[in-house]
Length: 229
Image (cartoon, rainbow, N blue to C red; front, side, top):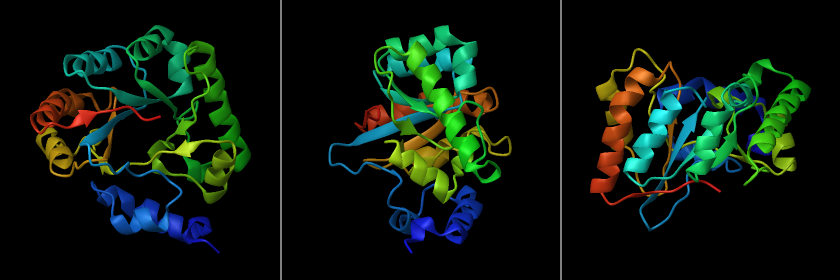
């Protein structure tokens, strides 16, 4: 049986992943059907933002990205899109990529297969209703990084790419200082890294500090910020 289908392996990974700011290469090897990074020799990196759109926070993120001519991918919660469609439209108008983050930010390990897929498709419908440019996005990131093998298999069967990460900022964690959050990112970025931030109220204190400095660091080191496709 492929390791990707063994629940105990998933449990081990998801139990320990929060300890790793930089995703372990062994994990990438035993879960090859997830997208952890996009190796390249062109110094391209991929900034991603989870949990939006949120008033003020997402708009501030867009402004920061524009200042540095950086593109990113926003993994949006369907319920937030419905609440703030005008902010969602700004993400699209600025030519960033959109990803599915379920309609209600579900925890995969606590949700049945049927409910999880229905909730994801509900988010997909909302995205399609408001995103006429690329309505059929097939980028998906599981909330909390937690997803059952059966859920992952069903989503892949529907054509989704399951996007994980190479570097996570930990901006959502109130016990992590802004300075440590920045260190988490700049000390671990390499060409091809997929980096996770959150355009959420919960992450705001860290994000406000770390994002401008990360973008300045990437510019100085001649990295190019691309969106996922």
